[in-house]
Image 1 (cartoon, rainbow, N blue to C red):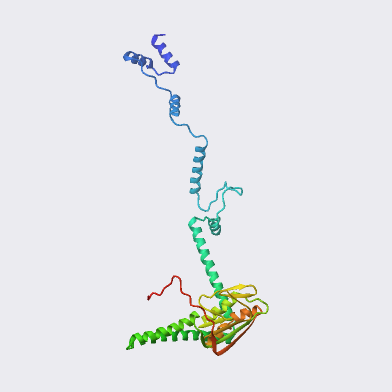
Image 2: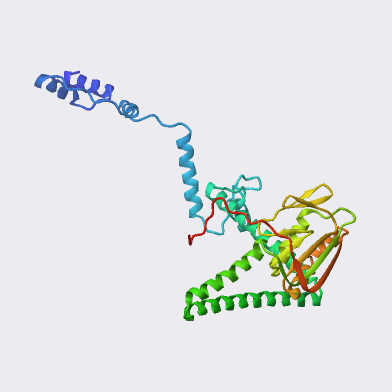
Length: 333
């Protein structure tokens, strides 16, 4: 066998193409040995090392969930998921009422809402108290008799007329001062008259005129100073110009206090029966004491006896010493 035939057999047994040895030898002789190509398995292993490590479970699960979501979106609207059975963990859909309850409870209260709530509560409480007080007054008048209501209206009309008369009197004095030829003499006369009026109010001069006499019999000892004070205030509101109680003149600065079994008026102790002498218009004074829930009814609830008599002449002769004020002086001086 020739040398050429032996070479062919070696190439056939080694699985190489003919002429590869000669080509390799030619490359080696041309200038050096060339790097050998890496096998496919080695190249794949190098790429795996360069890539970041794969997340073992989460990435796969996420990709699987994405594929299932895409598959569910691709299904028809009426087709149900075959894998979803009775024991599925899917949450039930909430109704509108349930969503409203979940939004309102538990309440989420801020500081501003709390302040507004407190202010509204205070306003509502004040309105409730006002309505209750008005209803009590209305109920008292609603339960009054017809003659009592007529009496109250007459008293209001008399007060209005009295104020109107006083207004006209002051206007007349002004006109007299403006039109009088001797204004100094007219001013002197009015000053004297005004002094007398103020003397009656201050209790420095005696007074007489029409009015009433009120006598309070207190056999049980239940009448207190505040009840007598209410009677004085009611008489003043009805137009009383001079008041005397058991020989003590009542003026603007009069005070009353309980004193043992009696009452002290400006430091002077008086005992029952309490006798009031009042100068004023009898038609106004008596109804003011007899109104429903007024002085007479209050005293009668305390088992006291009240008697009111009208008179055309009442004399109030108890006097008070004129007291010079310590600090107040007339602005005309």
